[in-house]
Length: 213
Length: 213
DNA sequence: GCGTTATGAATGAAAG
DNA sequence: CTTTCATTCATAACGC
Image (cartoon, rainbow over all chains, first blue to last red; front, side, top):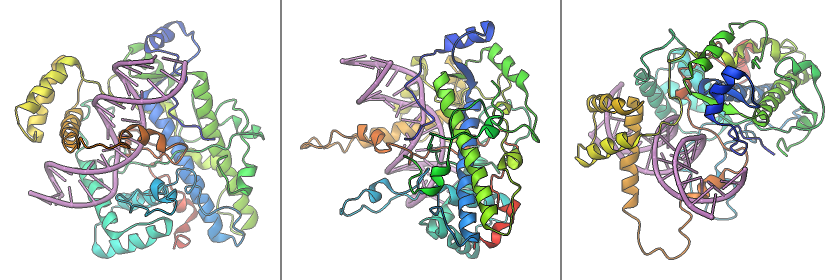
């Protein structure tokens, strides 16, 4: 079962109430700005990536890969929906590459380093590395850098008022959606991290292939 | 209700700002029900624990304890959700802008005029005008034209010879991504978010470059 | 209140 | 490199 961040079902609160809330402070919902929402999403996404990396790291160092190679493969996996479920049909070739969270992270890193000059040589290298985490082509890598730069550039005229300098073009980007195995167990020690959260066991997650149930 | 993920380090929380924001009634907010909040909490908490578990696992199996026992502590990288620059006016419409009838009419008009491809210059102009009738950004205008064209185009080749199975034009798409495979779009859109730890990787912490091949 | 539909937004790829 | 196209994702609006 996966909990999507964008759950629309329970929208029983309305904007009007929001304002009211700030004044009265009484109603059952919480109010968040879009930014906050995004931030939260991002936070989760980061964890997703982090987990993925940890798993990867673990598998690299340990000879006892208890975990399936990547959470991403399940978590926010990027498998071509069509291809994956292609039941003996001519799995239509993927027309559009979609970076794995891992790939994206690597790319983003390289980009940030500035060393990411679309040097043909470098491209090949990067492609090499990325291929470890999913299908990829040099062309895609090239495109990615092209787009990345082009878009980060045309990004000012959004709002004239900004608090101050920000992360510039080297922004963190991650995607992938969390998954949740939510269920038994309890790690009280972590409750302080967030909120008096409910059950959040994961042991089983580490022993099973099925991360999501 | 502060959604702090980590206490230490990046403590630049500015709760005040948040409240202020809600008072300003920028209605740029979102409302979440307790259930939704709960979901988020769970998700994040689970990831937090998962990461920690992974680290622990790693340290147990490997003789190279690269990480301090908890990501939560290093997770300093996990900024405070509430921090996002929520100054009253910064970025007003983060999400889905909806054109007012007036704006739409104007846009439709311009589009019809065959101005063809609105160059950046023109876009700015149009944006100017539209802003008279409601909030709008250049980006939105740009998007609008992009979509307008793309869609009017896709309408053409709609062969009337539709035999049968064709109705599933748009509906299916939504269902396809049933569970988590989801993914999400925007990354660049997040660039404006203040992000304490730009690089969400951990390899630099672990110096895992060597492992990643 | 839940499922669709229409459409704003993001983004890989390609053209210019 | 810059601009445009095509595809896809996410959600406001709408119908039941």
